[in-house]
Length: 208
Image (cartoon, rainbow, N blue to C red; front, top):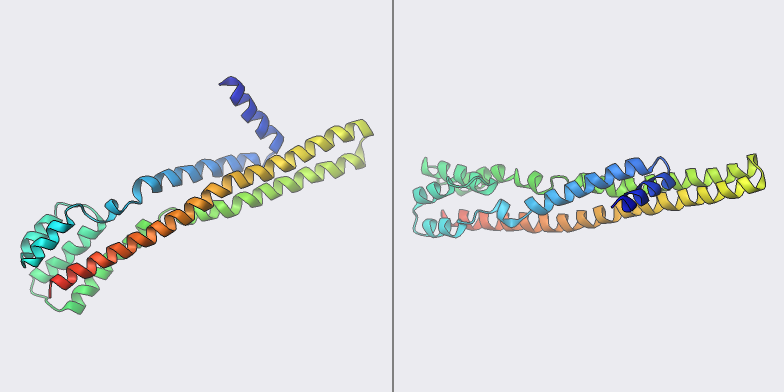
């Protein structure tokens, strides 16, 4: 364990100062990825008793459907509960009910896209930091030849090239998982939004 930690610290030392922000970005990206894996699921946005709600609405038991939705805490249930509440008050005009549902369901998009822009930013910033580390490493290489004797120049040459390659590789190691996760979660989020909209339309159609 100590040997592995020693290798990590040696890698950080070789990569130069840019390794510290890269490590921070790596930790943040995995925190965001784990959060999305846990929360970005269809079950987080559509209630498990949705079929029961549909059956009640098919029987025009709107009050029963409202009570079932009241047991849930997800955005979809809250939106439909508000819509059914308006229906029970006597507002049977579908355009108005649709507008209410759309307004309430607008909260789904921010919930689905939570932390995705941060993952995208990390995927963009990490390679640039790696490039910056590459440039600083190369600067050390050229400075070595300009300011010291041959033997010392060779030592600084190896150090500078090592810093350049380590920083560039670390930048890519941080960016690639973040970018991959961003596209996976974006596509999954789009599917969830489509399913939410489809289910909402079906339920509104049952109110006719």
